[in-house]
Length: 265
Length: 158
Image 1: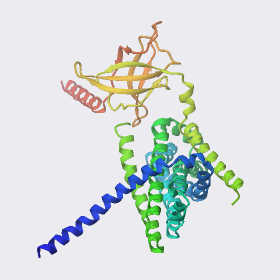
Image 2: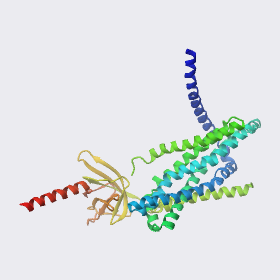
Image 3: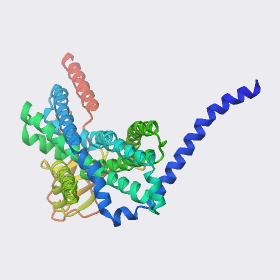
Image 4: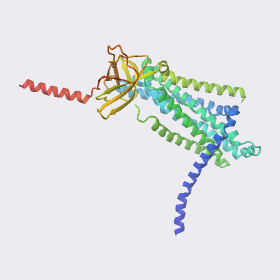
């Protein structure tokens, strides 16, 4: 009886210990990745190759999503603003919501599902087919050769993708607001320029997207490297990448927003 | 994929990303205007009541934005609001400039309006604006109007 009760408590404790252990393992993995990053800059073509897969191939989905998100913001924003007779503030609404929040967050979510899952699947499959062990056998460090270039490529791509998303979204909002609905062209841009601050809004958005880039790519390479080397394990790791990095983006976004935009304005 | 065309695509991607950042900085946030202003100088003004004035609110003169409110705090000796403003150093104002808290539109944001005086000495960095006018608080205005009406009514009866 007593031993059975102890078993229940143990069953409760086990996942907790496991979770803490995994976080610690991920942190050590991050440190090792940073320590072996030299190769990805000395042989920059490795990183460029990965930027093609994570950045360039995400362009289409980022640009199209940005355009449509901006156009929807234009329609919805106009519908609300015109009730208060301030439809000229449409530019402000579209640009601030994109630059501060939607750009980094939605681009990050898309990046996690488009590029993050691919990174995990690739590294996981390399592990399952023992390519990583083969590299070690040939005295090639798989973290320096495989993990670090992918990590840095993701970190460098993410801010660019978020900026493209925001720019495209503002263009979409402009198309709908000025082109379709007929908000005044001059008021759209001038009110936007008066309300959006370079450091406070744009730079904070870039910082956000950089942090999301680090989080998403770290989770992606870690899950791939840590995957159980079977078909099932790789598919599980890919799913975990998307879920964990999406949650990480939303959680980090709240923390960053609380620090950046509190007590001002 | 060929190495050279891969490099080309990544180059295009990086250039496009940079262009988007420059677009956000200059077209959306109007960084150009911030650059062209060489520097700013800081002046302080004391108000009895600043209403809903916020940090980063514009400082305007004749409707032109000439600076931003940098900080607001309460002086606990005199119980006045101390407003610190950064004014563009392209614009010099006389020492006897008049500062008032105004509202753009009926429900618009509040800003500090500067009305230039006639003094030949200009305000310098760290100077204080001596003549100020507080924000108009709507409740006070209404109650003044109501009491005025009531007083008028009594006069009429007499």
